Image 1 (spheres, rainbow over the protein chains, first blue to last red):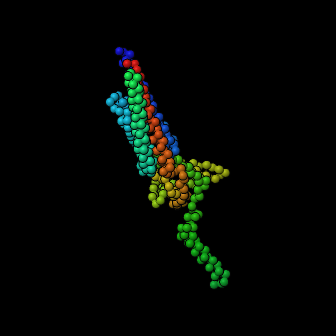
Image 2: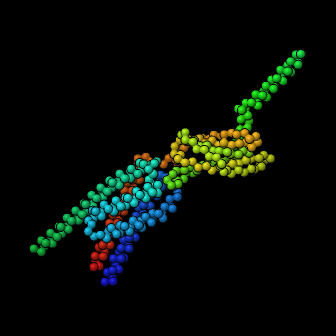
Image 3: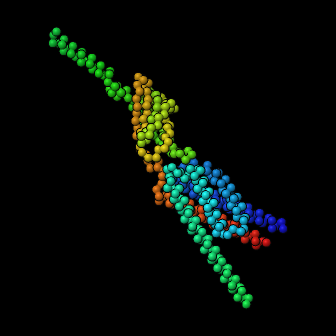
Length: 148
Length: 186
């Protein structure tokens, strides 16, 4: 019993750290490139602490959400994608990476492509689920026929 | 009156007239009293504070006469910014029995993205307390412009979408893996 309790906690903690690192990495890559190329801002380093805090908090929310077992994989994908997009847009707006006065084009282009990306990722998820279900059904059918 | 006396009187009157003209003409005095700014140099640095773009200008020059800088006026596309009570660095050197005055000012300009900057330095010549202005024109460079075109915007938007998509897949896969691991042990 004790071993069973330890494993879920260990997997939860590992999962949490994986998510934190993933979110931190994507935020840093996006904003480091924007900061370096567009704004030539060399004081970007001070934002890393803010990114680390945002990543940790966001991962906690995602971990809590993913513990709910009755959500289908497609809904999970949509919610996680929208959640990550919202984090990127809000962080970018609050830290002035998305400057709505002088640089509206970047903001508009980002929103447009995030919407296109959502459509693509939902299609991919639906296809994967269909293929997985089809192969599972085929396997079950073969298993039943073998029994006969 | 003899001819020589007439000529002498005429010369005297002409001399007096010249003196009066020279005294009353501001243009002549301004050119004589206008202090030359030698080795005028400027350096620019772009900084961002709370998303607002600011350009820090560092101006330096030397003069042979001592001056007091009273104000700096900057103008970009008819928008004027005037600063008085300026703090500046002043150093005097004696070179070959000549006094050389070195000046340096740091000045910050806000919202300069395009257009030529017209900089006017108002000063007072210490010798005769004459007020004067010096104008400089500093063109905007490509480095100032922060608005990117649609091509660059689309590139960064694609990067953002790719990062978010990959991040989503990693999170889903890691959650799936941890769920599978806990099921295997049960």
